[in-house]
Image 1 (cartoon, rainbow, N blue to C red):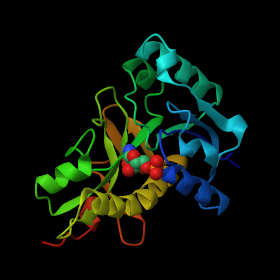
Image 2 (image 1 turned 45 degrees about the horizontal axis):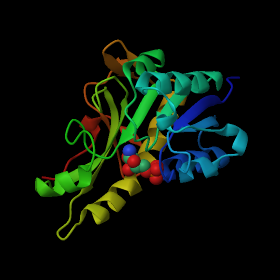
Image 3 (image 1 turned 30 degrees about the horizontal axis):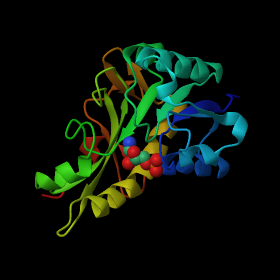
Image 4 (image 1 turned 90 degrees about the horizontal axis):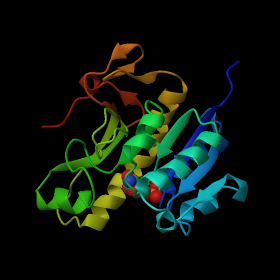
Amino acid sequence: MTRPSRIAVLASGRGSNLQCLLDAISAGQLDAGIVGVFSDRPAAAALEKVPGELRWARSPRDYADRDAFDLALGDAVAASQPDWIVCAGYMRILGGGFVSRFQGQLINIHPSLLPRYKGLHTHARALEAGEFEHGASVHFVVPELDAGNVIAQARVPVLAGDTPETLAARVLEVEHPLLLATTRLLVAGRVAECGAQVHFDGQPLLGPLLLDSAGQLVRAEAVSTPR
Ligand code: GRF
């Protein structure tokens, strides 16, 4: 018998991705427990989703510099003894010290089809560029922003008349099943970072897994893309 995986979540905002993981755990769809929610914004709604003893929130303004904040955050995360650390709407850049401390255990969900649109305002930038397609990516975290190995992606169409808000809502709908499906693979030991590569079921992953219409992650070559 293996024990449920211990997942720490870093979040700065509303926490809908965290809620998706909590719901899946309650429904028996994810063999894991949330061992802590960590935030750089003490008012973040995400914190309210777990009991008080699982919350850690500090303002970076109370620390001398990024390294000091990251060290305190890292010590708190480490004390929760996580197997996996999921950045789910964590809006503060993690320094190299934090990232290397948890290398291979640290993933992030980002609202674009990486490597396109790293950073902020992804939906507005995709619309400005006239993209026909947009989406979300889950990737391992490296010190360079949104640049780590991509594990999995979900795509949505850009529709005529879309605004950044309508497009963001369509992307968020696929973020939840994408994050859940990716986390399920991680806790099952089916996905791991091996050196510079991601391995899936023991084989190198040559491109991101894609979320299909049934909410399953499949190798890209198994998905037919409309032309
Ligand atoms: C999501 O769009 C996520 O991709 C981005 O921030 C948003 C967080 O949403 N990094 P929530 O806090 O999980 O609702």
